Length: 312
Image (cartoon, rainbow, N blue to C red):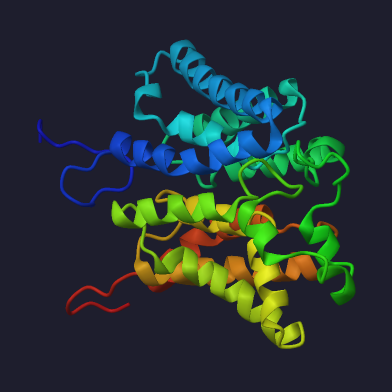
């Protein structure tokens, strides 16, 4: 029993993996989106990213110090939380609000529940929703890229104005990310590079985020006049790819089984479509993932593997 070691999830993974290695892979996968965000939105985006990451790491360090707990900042989970939060924010969010959001993510959502592996919701997603509700005028919507200071409305806002307005949005613009939005959500090419890296490194299964994206696409295809281009516009616009690739695949706050993860993502996709189509906010990815985080225990119980000779 002296050699028994209990750690946070994931408990079983590929050979040579560890929490730090997995988090490092996530950071590496986010680098293309981070660079693209700084290039598109300018130095203000860099300050937001640095503020979120630094305050997240510092918040975890101070909490562990005050509570006399073992320091855990070396596992890089706080870096991932701060970076994900930053990439979900506008480039013109006041720095002090970035600090408040990061501290909330680390202290309230993560540390108060016992630290990594014990939180019931994704810290970055929860902090983003908290900031959206608290600082709606500065967090909602999207900042304009530095190359086009006249742009103000994000593609999702334009898409919700009808088919005629949607025709003004090109798929190339969405792929390149040269439009208003959050720092890390606009450049589809950068996000796909991160997705490919995580799949190659076997950190995530390709079909998990794909099921999220496919659900949203099918919903808009069926209820949007069977228009492929219009459906693709909704898939590529907003934070769908960022959320599906990097937050709906979180080991801790999603079901452990592959079936459970797919059910989770299908539910998140349906909620995203419902919120975007009928809700007060043009974007619904964060709220959808947070809602499904809270339903994870029920999904996990429903999709758990049946033991040999046992009863489900």
